[in-house]
Length: 84
Image 1 (cartoon, rainbow, N blue to C red):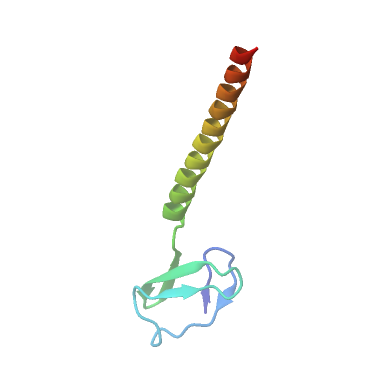
Image 2 (tube, rainbow, N blue to C red):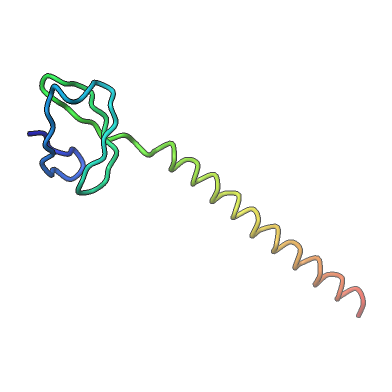
């Protein structure tokens, strides 16, 4: 028996049925697991750091968009003040 490195649930795998480098999903926590060794079977959680970095970049773009909206509102206020 092999245990998920993320949630420690037992995963029923046969050494002869998996290949090194194969990607599996944990049936309990749905973590992506890579088979890094087959005799005995050893699994590693595939890091989602790359996805998180993409999300961070998206967050930065959203913050810039909010800032741009604020600048536009300031310009409108300035035009109204000039009219008065």
